[in-house]
Image (cartoon, rainbow, N blue to C red; front, top):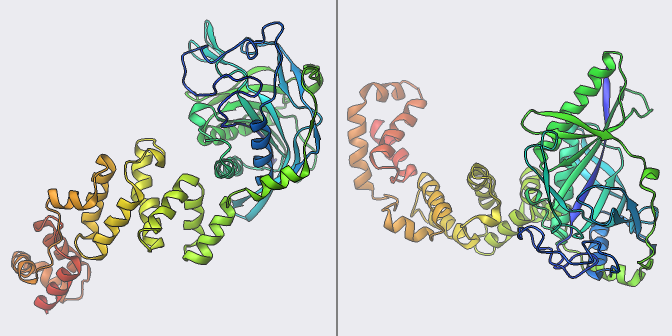
Length: 478
């Protein structure tokens, strides 16, 4: 029997405010354990929460970018459960009256553009962090750090419109890009400021009924999301094929073993005993304030992508790659302020720079090369001061040291040789040393010329002007 998957994602985004959602403690990442805490976020008796207005503004900003309807009336609720990282034994969240509903975003698939619905966006406080001594399933004990307790979050809940792990990954990538463009979060998955829970079930292909779902918790990379869904879909299909049934439960992803593991049976909403938080008044949001925030939204990924295609002449593919990261797109635009060749800049960003960043698992904001330096290197290339091959050497040195391209070229003696006499002498030597290859070229083997060009470039350590080398070789051989 053929099956299809039904996938919905719950994405937690940590908001980039200076203080927590209900107290003035710092939200800075990386402090010593239990140093960014106070009686409010530790849930000590006799304290009261006070809502951070910036959290509401950021939640509205992100929701508008996701095409959501902003609620004029909203409230906070207590979500009651016991876990060691939750000092109050309840989490302040939003249940039936969230701040935003009914949004969407569009993703590119092999079938074309697909619209993924967003059920709701709601605000809540983060829990603390358990530091396991081993994995979550084998740890003999765990330590708790409450620094993260009370850090403001928005949770973005998608419709179950995703059908493949690939679509789920593309949704997460697009969502991250949109949130980064709004400026409300840095979305650093490695620091936990963007986290994802995936709900997945399988059903016979063509069926409209939903199967029993499982939830995979705390997926902290795009790769982990895709791999965990691939495994879980295959696991559920195998269970059904063997005559078993799927149990509704929460599972965790074991990265090392490449499998999902059962954690606990899945709770329903009533198990949390939600009720309105008596210490926080409901929110009444002024529509004019919402419109002010809407007018302040920056150019978002899809808008910027269209502009790159229509005004800069980039292909849809190139424009999509560049705009997928706000930092990459900002770097690209700053380069264009100093060098007008959009396609050339895009090629270096998508090729050599991305390769070097990926090799070291770095983001572009960690790159030592400044946009103006890349622009100046491209001018050296256009002027014939360096060749394309030398440019790659210069670029890697710029990446490692952050030095200006002109200094690298000067100190390493990388200026391109464009003197006809000097190149002609080397060409004569190469022709004399390779008579058979010369005859092959005369006999119509075009590849033979490429070999001879390579020999000249080798003898000149890549400095010879390639166009001049080709021209001289053809003249002398003919």
